[in-house]
Length: 276
Image (cartoon, rainbow, N blue to C red):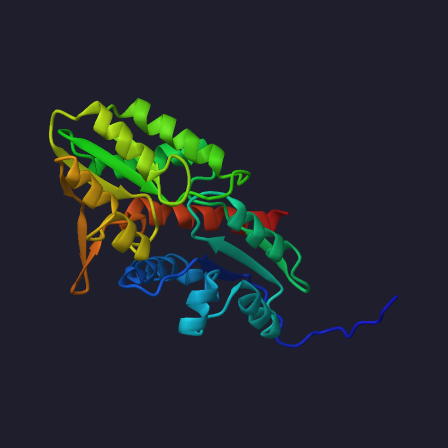
């Protein structure tokens, strides 16, 4: 058996916390800043080391921020042997599974992954109940998620479930994805066929940040969902949030209920790390 040096100095008793996000280079990163403040305030008494990691290679190149492996390696170097990684993923799809694989195989540390925002059907009910407070009663509400281009992605079952859930629970709701099914093109055809009697539509992004997808795919001047809805004769609006002098499209990261939900996921992961 290979001999290993017994490391005794600088070992930390408490686990570290890594917030893993896709990342963005747009002003939408304000949603991350708000969550960072919430997490640090909530876990202030725990004296936990809190760091961020980004899964987008483009974001890492532009900002110099670490990826998950770099973040864990740095924590291990500083004496941490336990960590909770909480991704800000909305659905447990392929990207979430890849992140979980990297964490479970990381040498020298015991890492527990927190669950995604919509990891369980009860979570779906809780989150949609919060978002539904912003639905307009007269007109239509178009809820837009990211989606996935991969047919075999496990997140597809959830996207199809969201489509069924939203359109059956709220008769004036339509669900679309930017990069999967149901596509925005199909939903536009559905809306055109139904000819809503009230010519008003509200766009609600089911995305954590109001990044480039919101700026271009949802609200861009041409070929966006908003532009295409307007060609159907609909007056389109969306909710904005004021934060530190800036105005942002209201994405999931601006809902207090969503931030509390992710903190709940962290608490559960910490318990798993302690008891198991």
